[in-house]
Length: 607
Image (tube, rainbow, N blue to C red):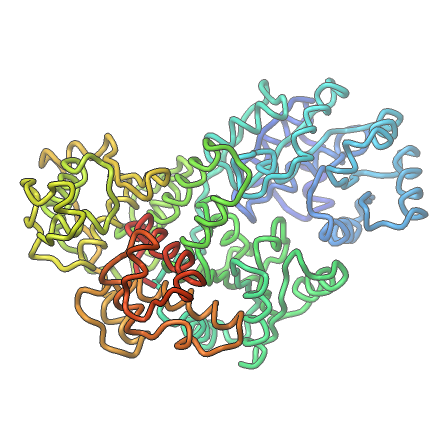
């Protein structure tokens, strides 16, 4: 089959003079009846890779898509171009579904969109057996990965396409997949012989910006009012309640904002999504339940009020901005509480130990991207195996270089302290050793006799926590969650320890920002991040009971918790203001915060 018919379809049906890089090669592969795996960034033109061959080849192209709420919009868009398109999913009334099935069997469809849960049903497969099929396109193919952020169990059964229809070409497409996920797609979908097409991951029109939380709502409001007062955009939050609260608050500030999460009534979700797609200037405040496959070209910003748990999720979510190629913003604020919540979600999941460990590694990679002092785009692309020879000039670290300092010697001291204490202790204990604090635990384990005892008295506690945090984020140290946050050296720290590598660290303005947030002076030995985490737990407990926070514990009691860092209920009971009743009622919950902070306080800045 010549390639000319494909180019003719591209020009006459879709109105484009020529294919983009890789598009033509993919189309040629499918038109020739061969399989393909395609990785292209959002807005890179993935859809044309299967739409054009579906019109060139004899039969109907069947597109497997998890995006039930968007199928109608996709079909409507194709029909506007004169393409005979239809869809089958649970939202379609029985009579209309029968009409679509009849059109398929009569050869009156060019493209049919099907939800994966319907495709794996025997009745649907029997229907396909009787139809003329041009190809199978498996969209959002990363959903097959059990390690990924959008895993769908139904995708695991899509290998049946190869088994049942071995002579029909298949194409798997995604915008988000690291090397491990790509291999999983090939294996689980039986695409071992497929040619791989990997376009660059760079979206040069998107400006990446990341900042520490200090007053997130006001930070968001300033960003929207100063830069996007009338633009369409998406604000991602971690919880359902936060999406609704934030959307209501933005409406009070004069924005057309709508909430979206999986807990909303399906009709209301569909209404909100339709408004976002069809109206101008709407801000969608959503959980990750929203957005996969959103085909709205003029999204001018994507904002994250909470930390995504993986770089893949961050890349895919920010990729919904600027699909038209025009300038767009990816803006995010993050803090300690985000990581505590993500860790709790991981621990509560039913995944295996291996799965949880992989999740932790991906979270660490996300934190590393936040902590980077060099070009943020280069680091993001490097994660996916892509390269950018020069700094991009269009991210926050390029436009406003962060203040850094030569942390080589401090890093060597920190690594040495972790090593000499047997790699069995968390950050707070290591900080005590470095600063020469003769605490009960330091003396108990004889760590006051180590060569590293007291060698770090030139830095305060928060500065040392910043050092440890950045060593974890950059992969020199790992956090052993099974040993209550013990820090362990990784192999790549050897050149740094030997003095063969220099390390510049970010200079954090945490102390000043945090004190503005707390609006009170704190003793110098109080870690502001832990202080805020304890206040947040106190606030949530008070809210549940409808009482003022101070009735649970006074501020001075929280400060004493920060100073003493109790590790057991017995130690917690010795704190001033903690009686027997409050010990029984609240002790375990506040100890949980302290332990969580000890485990991951090294990995994030104070919020």
